[in-house]
Amino acid sequence: MEEIDFESDTFEDIVAKDDRYAPGAYALLMDVIRYLGEGGKHMSAEEIMDEFKERTLDQYGPMSYTVLSEWGVERCEDIGEMMSNLEDHHRVRRDEDDNPQSFLDGYDFKEAFLGPYQT
Image (tube, rainbow, N blue to C red; front, top):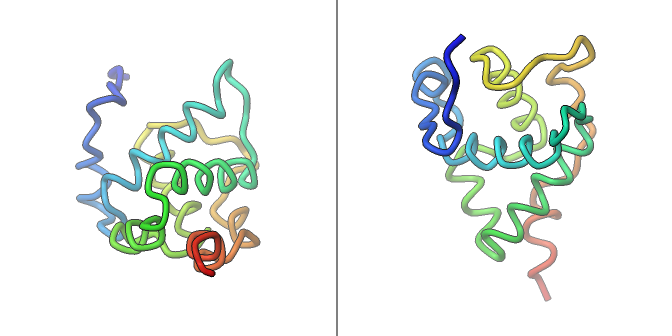
């Protein structure tokens, strides 16, 4: 299998098959996966969702919800779908317990990404 350069990955092959999510969303998710998976550690859906939220808020602040919406990511289930796409396109390894349904009981996006900035 060809080595993937994640720093310059455009995710064109994934978006060509499933254009619901923008390449920027996949790049953000890959940053989360690389960070959490250091040392080969397996990540739970909850860990991925929590780190995704933290990184998004850190990078985009009050614009987080808007950016994610423009990228097509509007609920935790979307993170699960993107994970599945990354697995199908050999960007990450699939564990037998990994499935998009693991992301169903996540947080409310409006509350998570707008709440910290509402007065």
